[in-house]
Image 1 (spheres, rainbow, N blue to C red):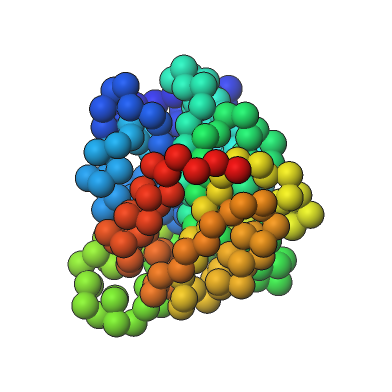
Image 2: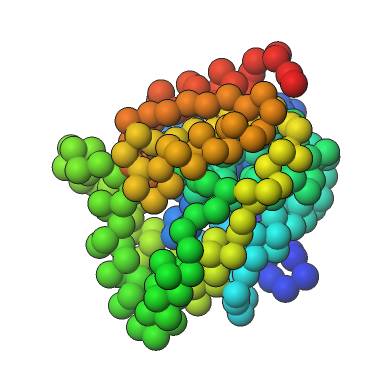
Length: 266
């Protein structure tokens, strides 16, 4: 664990794996922290120096007044790379992290080797979804975060997985209840306002799109939309709801590794 000093606060990060291996950045979803990737670390650190961080407004990172933007969160990633003297890295982000990955691919592709965007879309939802949630969270604070946690199990995992793995489901969803209400609302606004549908074609780094068959938040159709517009992009789909890295586990890790380690380029 460590902290990088940004202009307006500290960004919490963790590095695992061989010191001189290529760097793989992992970016968390809305309402989780860097530990959402715990299941991937044993496999990923066999090949990469894995850099995880808590997105602004989450975990142990800075919480600044909102609303945030995906550009702001993407620039936080670039500042993190600069502070750690990392010129280029692979990037894997899920949901909101996938939006950050798209922004990086569009605006800072020279900093990326390869890009993986998971359980995401070029545009996620609309203001009728996000504005009531933002209003409720800002009004009710921690109580709203607990209510969101209780509702998130059905969004993040399929019923059979949640029933078979109650401790893991609780561990992940407890991250949501622990998230700052102010930070969560500010990030909801970032997701609400992001729309990369007209910019995807400018992504030129090798890209893998991952989707979950049962993902009601970002259905496979959104993944196909990205894959069809990013030249040469690959596509993978797992039986999972919104957190495919948790639910698909080793199958997710193996597919991402096969993509990152392949010599193929576009």
